[in-house]
Length: 413
Image 1 (spheres, rainbow, N blue to C red):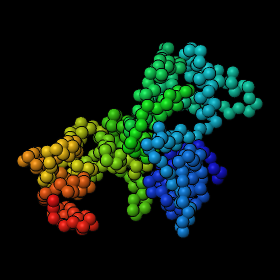
Image 2: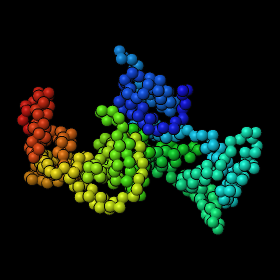
Image 3: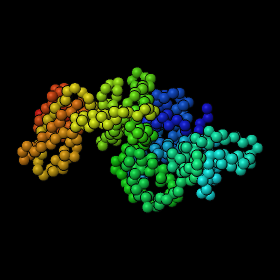
Image 4: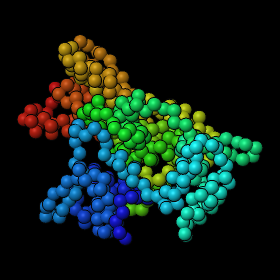
């Protein structure tokens, strides 16, 4: 099949972009997605959007292609371009411009009036036009009404359609749209708004840390937020696991969680099969299918609120809590460390036990989730204990290895 820049299947593009952007440095034979020819087609498609950000290196394993992006030096997330490359049928394109042209005079029209005008004034100019049937036009009118391009009114039993009035002064919103597009989890919306400016001003924002990759999950995020608002169950199609084959899960989505450390996005949901709150990574979700409304939605939200004070990361629902206590030696002049403790303690508690000593305690479902954070305080920890002795032993083993690496002793400081 010949290569085309436009796409119909966004989920496949998410897979390839993740292969290049996250896993990178892979040759064609190492990318685990379909055939080498498919790889070549998708690579050319990505190059048409992201050619300025693609690099490669040659080694014994072959040519490895990857995305190379320094978020400090680009004003806008380049991955939004993938969302603007959707393909359309001939009828889609024809109907789009014909409908806007007919309704440009501001006069509302019914479905049958629109259909008659299309046949008489537009399709009649062609020798062998593709006819537009009533069902196709009705679906297009509903799509544009839902998108806010058209408004509807009633005259008797008939619906009348007209162009929606554009009353928003975009000029006063450009800075807000710039900030939204780079900082909001649904930033692709801001990116589409920015495309409406004919001569965009230079951006006033610069970002030291941005999580660009999660732009690819905006479609999944929007579907989940819509289900949360409608209080619906959803059926998730999940990416293949270790043993291959895509998986399915029926859940009640409750809340979106975003890691402040790595930007990774999760959906907290209730699983009727597991009968508890579970978390799914958005980048592992291929498709979201809305189902029926959940009658017990309020009660499930309360269940999540009840568990929240014991959730450090994404582990929850265990029968037993694990207690962890860390004592740190902090000089009073190092006020920034104390402020950091207060800012990052999440569900834990921080108390001052003496002039130079502060204690952090937490009762959580899984103390292993604290390990990366705990390690950032090495050098100030005078004591660390945990009811899960494996966590405690692993920490001090890591500490001893760290101290040996830098030529120090293995004892706590």
